[in-house]
Image (cartoon, rainbow, N blue to C red; front, side, top):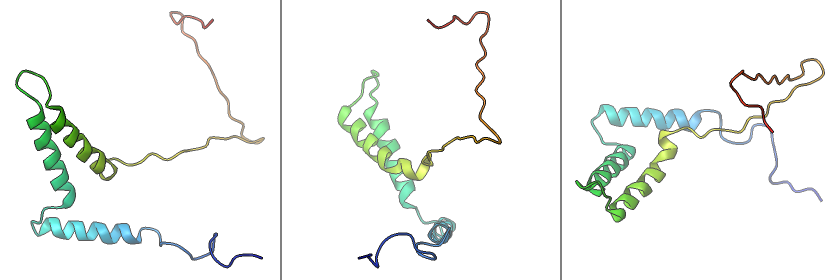
Length: 110
């Protein structure tokens, strides 16, 4: 028997851009009001811990460095876009062509 739940349904799911636009509007409003944003707290804390972790003799306080790295790991998704996978494919009408060019000073493989 076919389940009535799950699977792809037309009109299902979050509407494109809905939460992002609302979240962005809230962040802009808070910033305009002089409020500190959670990401700013994370970045300032991370930088502060990293500054404390770096000793004058060039060594690191590993405990403080690990704390800074933990915060960096948590903040990274908000600072850097996640790259998506892409598939490159050709077809009979427009096939893919791969051209290998060797230069005179480039040693041949093998």
